[in-house]
Length: 103
Image (cartoon, rainbow, N blue to C red; front, top):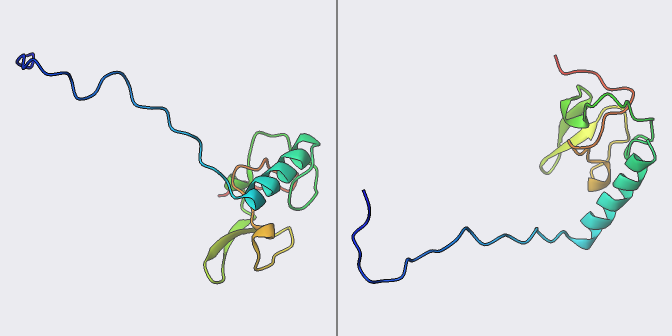
């Protein structure tokens, strides 16, 4: 079934406008760059252990736990734990050699 002709232009043409990537806070961008440099050198960004190279990430490791402080923050039981964001464990980081599957 087709819409009746009204003589008006369609409201939308083409596809959606591409979205600009979100702008990161400068400190977040710098921390991500430091983490990526360590990863590129085969070193885990938080605990400085060698990377496992098994295709897994911190996000599927049993050592990644949430610590309840002013909020819930992901921390690694094997690394230093502070109340600051510097010891938060990113789920996308590649696993270190101490990686253990979540049962």
